Length: 318
Image 1 (spheres, rainbow, N blue to C red):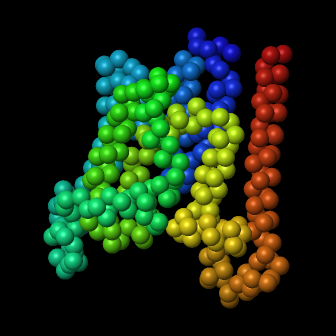
Image 2 (cartoon, one colour):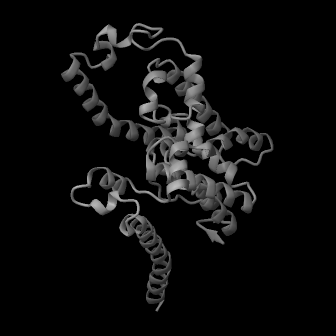
Image 3 (cartoon, rainbow, N blue to C red):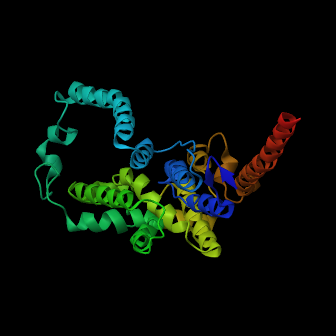
């Protein structure tokens, strides 16, 4: 197939689309960015992109001349002026200083026992390990699929990469800088378990481009296996909203769960007593009914959508 002056390998595009479907709870907003990069490089045309705008601006900048890239980047920076100014105003209004973080204004006794006066200092080995492997906030525990990025340098050496080498280098440098910076936040090891993986999330959009590049080179059965495992863990996290191991345990032991249903079970004893009784037919079958309704809805989207597009094309051609 030829589109916009470029040749598109339809099977490869489908493999890439399946590859970028392998996202955890962390990577949902960068799927379109990864798909867009691959389609532009394969088809020679620009694809609509929604998602992490920073990653999109960066990749577009690599593919343009310096003047055009600088102009697009300045527009992105201009769009960030308002939110950044609002944040600085908030800091000034609440703490009297727009530049120093809230921790600077806290009583020193809050940071008693830390190796630093304000909870920020040299990198801690415990934090370096925990940011990747801690069972309650480690990146590779919440989204093991990101470990595939480690194989991307092999693709570069073999000249089989689609994400440009300089883009990959920047992604790794940005990830390394943020990783070290987060390890310098000493209260990570004391409080991070309450919030899950979040500090290192800003580095993931660029890193996911490398993951998508690796996935697009895999055999189909391996890709499907990784998809099932990654989506399964992500689904368990979204349903239970606890640590990965606890979320998987509860889903496997108790079946599908929903945050809204869990809330009703905990607080709805007065108005919905049947939901608090595990032996109640309503409590047993309601989750499965909701899952069935969602699957039917997804199937209808896939079934009705192509038919409507086909009708539109037929009318347009007549």
